[in-house]
Length: 591
Image (tube, helix red, strand yellow):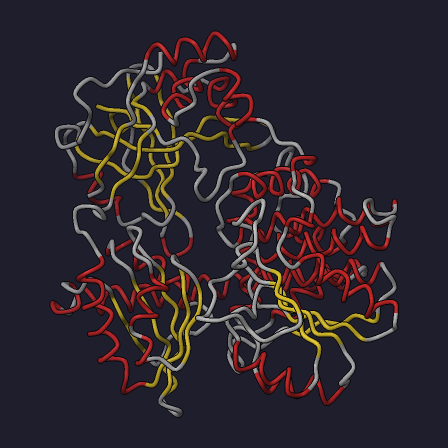
């Protein structure tokens, strides 16, 4: 059961915001709940201006990297973009490739195989690239900052290497020619939370400046940057970095750019996802429709095809790849459902596992490309950090992926238990690792011991912050449409979360979707009837149907477009019998 934390209700601030913004009280209450005191602050929050993006010269290392890249271009040297196999790495690779191709460079890309090479730089690839062309310039995107041994090898071979990344540092920086990173030690930066694609976009922007008049890009390069924002938006949403400040600007403008994108592959991807004719795209369209199709390719070992999709100008080829990705995504979903069921049963059937603060699960049948998604679902289901390991019985090794819960620093935990691991990397919320099978039990014990001292059970109890209690009648089309102006929504800038008490079921809940994973129900309060959907919560159906009492529901409102009409729909987050709901002493409606 989640704890519902209600924001304070300040009727004076709500009234002032309603008056100054000339908006519905519901929007005013959400703004007040999020600490906005008045109309000017609200307008600043709601505005996004592409001119507010900081100049790329403020990104540590970007100027030096751009200088070297332009010099290599002008000298006719081959430039290889070394990327990663997730949506952030794929879009970052595509951004830099498009930029250099437009500039007339000899450019290609290298995406490591998830299964054979793993994440980041690897020594075999560096040797291969050096042997093929020792004069080439190698530029990483979305990886490399923790690849110390591989960087040393490149230095020994004489291979010029530029690292652009945003991930957590190793104990020291790699020995490379340039490191571009928004949190580079000893440097000031305008914004620290760019993803790999955001960093690549800034580097491409710096390159365009140098190929222009030094400050402004040429007209063709400006048009490229306008279209590249759409790829930066995909990487930003797909990598779940905080959606504020510059990230919010990139996503806001990127969503607009997608509507008129000249990128052939992106157009075909929108078509296959049934988004091409949608009047307005949202960050959720990236997160739930576009990014999963790109990620499915990487998870199933075909990330190079994803870069080809986003770089080709052949419409027929792009359509074929997009269709293939759609099928891959369906396969990924099926594999994910099976693995989640297996992992959940492992915990349910093992009393010792159920009591552990961090779940460390291993299985020989698990797909290494899907363990990260399933780890996230397991962490959410059991309300604790989870690490899933796909075992290779022939080599007695395992590749693992972890997801955090309750603010637990997963990367710090792996660092503390690193003696049991062959390698690891990532950040606070998500990380990957490689481990020998005999080390799994000692690692499980060590990480649980670490968590015992790092996790405050009271502080990390599963909870949801609720912006306001409302009546269903408050959720008019106009009011919810106004809430959409707070978007795009994402990490650290979520959709408004509301609660309503004593609602009645109109009809029994209905399971839907593949494997009956999702839930649909209709609720009534007074004369208002609204549909609720709960993604990934099909198992709630029986409990809700068996509840005789009225319900209290926690949800995010949205507008669902279907057949040319928009209806208010509630995305159900949690529910409780009305008698058990933890409501504030003096809840007040937005109206």
